[in-house]
Image 1: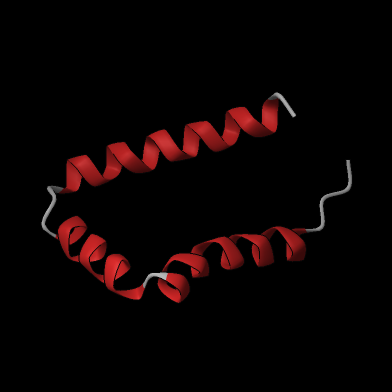
Image 2 (image 1 turned 120 degrees about the vertical axis):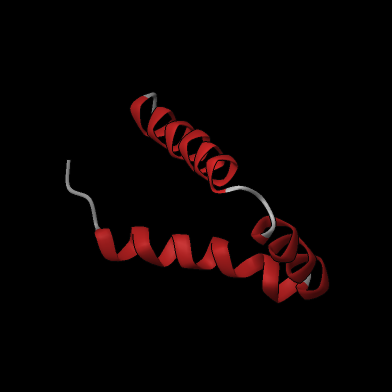
Length: 60
């Protein structure tokens, strides 16, 4: 399988940029709330998102 990592990174940047572009006030509020969360909670969210991403790739 030939993966074009440039395209993968570009797609991640596009998806990550949509929220602050379309809803900047909501995004800022979310980031402020997130910054107040304990590190453990942030890591758990990261783990869940990472796992979902891996499963999506695995079952593709």
